[in-house]
Length: 319
Image: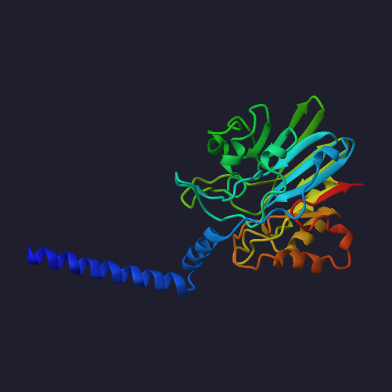
């Protein structure tokens, strides 16, 4: 009995010491895993801020192009009457479903529109399978009639959603959506990123897209690092708008472009107006949350008319 008691006491002491050391490590270590734990703790107590601007898509004209940044890489586009949504994410967190909730980054700013506030969506465009772009809880909300386009080798991820039959496109492939309001041509192009949903996942595709209708085209850059491949898009223009990612570059510069590089790639493609996305919504990297848009404004200081939106919820109507 005495030996058993001593064993239990020793075990409790070791466990307590381990817990104290673990707390001390998590509170002071500069390793990325420790910083992530500290961020997760801060996020748990932080409220999600309301969007600074609430759009009113019911007032948008049907005879033109209007694009609204709803948050992260989610953009609502009214393209001559058709409603298109890119990478829809409406969840408060993105990441792994652990049964009791989602373990992953928490939003800083709520979506500019809730799912119920969206107009009827004709087409959903998915750039790749990363959890902050292919958010299954959000995708499960859409009716089965919604037309979906996704990257190569991602259809299995969508098996639990209405998009399980989404059209997969590889680079250079295209599909035409034919609806009551007219046609939309969607062409996939190569960007510089990666597509696996998990570190040990199978290789998956990752796309940018050209959306074309009524003689006008929009470029959606998806997620990309800097690449000269955008120069090859110039001949497919002119483009009315470039939706470009501008954040998560520190330390992930091999997979995400800087704001200056986003401008350079839009220039290569011959696009003037830039709608920046992939910033201010989730903390996915180490640069300050407001740094990407500040750097973009500096990069465009001589051409400020090219920067179409700065805040979540702002809209741009193409002339």
